[in-house]
Structure formats: C-alpha cells, structure tokens
Length: 428
Image 1 (cartoon, helix red, strand yellow):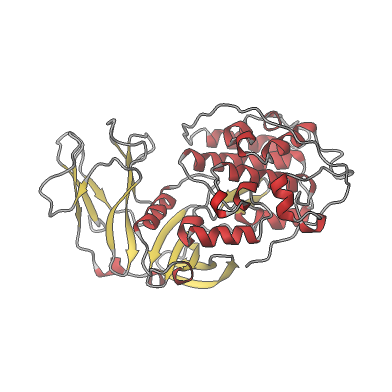
Image 2: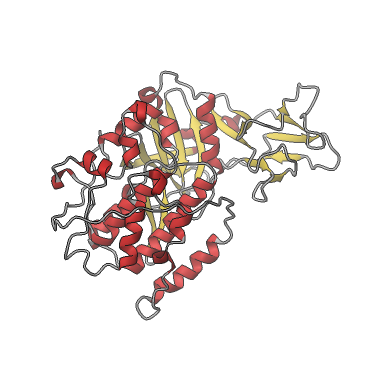
C-alpha cells in the first residue's frame, strides 16, 4: 500500500491488523461504540476510546490521541510488548514517510481570498492543488493566545476530537496543520452565507421555518453534548447556510475555547455578551458553567428568529445588557409577538432560564410540544417534506445520552413594547 503511513499490528490472531492510510484529517477511531472504525468489545475500553491520525507538521508524525484515562496501550515499533488488555493488543508502527507526504499546508493547498474575519481567526478560501476542490481554512495565530509556539498535549486532544466529529449539521474538519506560529484548520466549505444575514434579509422567520432550523440545531448540539463537547459560542454568525430552500444549516466554530485558551475566549465572550448565558458573566472565582450555556444561546437565537430582534441589548437599558442577561429581564412586545404561538413563547422561556438547573437540556428541547407540531402540508409542503428527510437522516446518527426532566420556573414577560435592533456585535 503506497499511501500507508502507519500500521496497527495485532498481537492476537483473531484481531485484524489495520493499515492506516487516511489523509483527510479523519483518522481512525477505536472503541466499543459501533460507530468506531475499530470496534473493541472490552469493559476497560471506552465507547470512543482514542483516535489515531496523521498530524501535518513540518516534521510529520503520526500517533494515537487518547479520549479517556483508561487506555489500550499502542506501543511504537521499538517496544517489546503490546497493550495490557488481553486479546486486544496492538503495536503501532510508523512507516517511513515519502517526501511528498511531508508537504506543509501551502504545498497542498492554494490559499485564496479572505472569506471572513473573527475574534480568534481569519478564514480564507483554500483550493486543493491535486483535485481543485474548495475548502475553507481557519488561520489561528498561536502567538496571540499562547506562550508556546507548539501545541501542548491538551490542545492536541481537542484537535483530535474536532477531527472525529461527523454530523450532517456540523462543519467537518478535513485536516489540521500545526506550524511554528500558526495553526491551520482545513474545513468543509459552506458558501451559502450566515444565518445572521438571512435573518436581516427576511426580518423574521415563520414558525415552520424556525422549527426546521431548530430541529437541525438541536440535533447538532445533541450530537456534541452526547460526546462531551460544549460549543460555548452559539450565535447566528456561527450557523452557516448549506441551502436556503429548503433551509439547511451547519454549525461552525465549536471547540475554539480550548484552542485559543480559556482566558482569551471568555474575555471576548464577555465583551460581546449578546448570546452569552448568565453564568458565563459571573466573576471568574464564581464562574461555573456546563452544556446549559448552549441552550441559553439557542434560546436567544430562537427569540430573534421569531421576531427579528434580540431579547437583550444595551439600547433597552437601563439596566445594562449584562444586567438584563444576569437577571433574565426581557419581554415579548406587541405587535411583534402577537401572532407567535403560545408553544413557541413557552420554549423561549424554558431556554432563557437564568438558573441553568431549570433550563431545558437539548433532549428536553427536542421533546418540547412546539417541536412536535406537524406543520400543515398546504401551508408549506417543502418544509413538511424536508422534515421527513431530516428525521430519516438523523435517525442514522446514534446517540446515547438520557436525562431526567427538571421542573421549569416561568418568568412573566414585561409589558414594555419597545425592542432593540438586530446588530452584528463588534469584534474586540
């Protein structure tokens, strides 16, 4: 196999030796779960135990990336013994790499114009030289966020997780290039624009349109949460449009907190807190948050989709936007909300709970009565039909998380009829 860069040589005649050749950034996932490339049925092995992938560095190396503390020991070719787990032992052998396999990002891709500029990275168009296929490459200046010029082990773990993600409503990662001063993440190219721009254009979505978008968003966040990943920066600018008719969305920019560093990430979020959960705005010594921050952000986005403007804004003060968020001060002003169903308003309220323990989980959000409404075919046949297509597609994405339903406290809306305008937060 000319394109093989490594071998997992089995030490057990019943376990197949694996030849490693993937170079698209996906790697090989090992674990007990049926989704894994190599399924190992052993109680000491996690569902998604580790990912082996080729990292594109100047000194190109290949190696295993653990997902959990207990692990199958993958030894180098110089080791005299395999893993400690009986009947599931491998020796990892890295093959000598040909010169063409040691190319850096610019040798493999032609870098084009800028597609976008965010708080943490610049995004440029990249064309694969060998195929002409288009990608988006996210360029992160590591010196801006970290003292060390090379990625540490914790960060490499995050990169490994990003590369293992595969969901129809999440932007896929095709490769990571770790160079001296920059980290390049090669991503699936989605060129339909941002959800933010479509909201500005349409001013507001109908309930069937909004329900279609949120079915996809809840499914994407459920996939991440089931795998222990919190997005932390859900906002319309990070929801890309794969198709406008019917509405097909993809979530981007998850995992950036660990890549750019916790302090820099949180400081930037607090500087533009439009979609940030109350617990994130607490003082550092009191700041504790979990997956619930994503559900708060989705509640803000749901509010905006249904009426066209945000629930929290400085122009609605006093108090300040941060105080509004911390205290859960918002309303459903007339006439903008007069024709919105009670079920939709109830879902917004249950997502915008200041106490994260009272906030819906993503599984509960998917089971909310508003998400279960069957849109009339005569009202929008394309949306109704596409819902069926999505449900069939998502049924193939296996998840295992279950949760109990908490009691939810309701906050009555204020009577004030004023509202804020939808604005793109300025970058810090």
